[in-house]
Image (tube, rainbow, N blue to C red; front, side):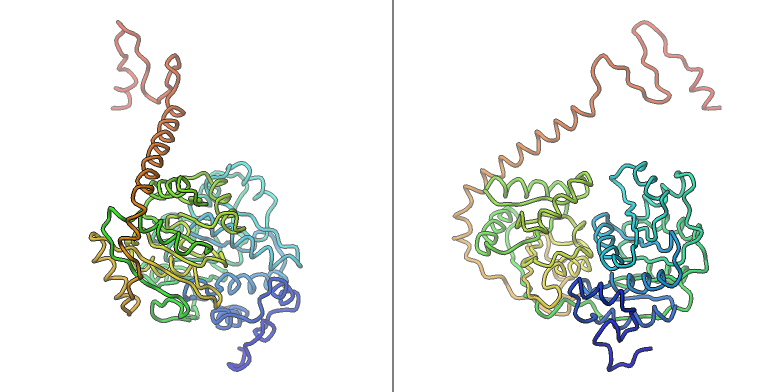
Length: 441
């Protein structure tokens, strides 16, 4: 293993020259703490449990050892990386391809919201690395002819706590049954939950635990504060803060897809460049929204917790928890979207009369009491009239959108509705019971 004092470069960790050059091209000057701890252990061929705060450079910590092993033993379908969200899968793919550009690495992203047949064709070409969400991968393992992972050498579970929180436990167990037992496994997680502990026992062999932060922490350069406000004035305070801090880029976290869409429409009606990101959007639109925000085309991203994990958007200046997270650990991940890679950032949490208990849990978790964000109520409520008008327009647009969706789903009056085991009965005719009675038998 590398000497403790000599961890300042990727080369000193044991990374080969071609991959060190790729790190230089990405302007990664020195390894992060998790990379310093994990890479030498991984290069020794050991299983790893990596626990690190969000934004700590976990992707390179598992991608570099895998790519180095691939150089020594070139083969197709070499590694599988499981992630909880589609956006994170695409982001990991970009990083792996950037790191492996000098050695011609081929990646395929297998997630929901994209045509199965297109993915099946890409899988048939046998890429080196598959990055997938568990549900869609199981669909392919069960339905795509000729696709298997019997030659797999590496399995990575990134954000393992979130994979299991999103109830992918059944899918993960199915995947573990069909991949080789003789493999290297890396389990990366921000938190060690009971489910992650159980998964670790089931799928890792004598793992080395690599822990960068033992307690739940937020980075030092992050200025955190809260705002205690009546629920009915939340929109007003949001608009006021966005105006006060204009010129910054924001991620505003909402609790539901519907509220995310509503807030984005309301802000657009007030002339602000806001873009929504939530689970009810088509995959193309989700990636489009993210790319607009990443390229600074839009300065405000309104998102559900789809965006709280792993997404690396370097220029986020302010995170606003418009709806307080129901799980206090999600607070750590949300505010981790700002103050990344040594930069500073702000996080403001809205606390209404209904959120006091949830907020107290957050303060307990992070081990500190947060200061109140300074606002003058009279100045905020001056915006009330304009905000109310924008709310009204947003609700109308949402209603119109819902009606259009219903119309698209509703068949034409003259069409027969093809529903299994139900037959369209013409007036005066008796509905045949033969099929149903057979089924009952």
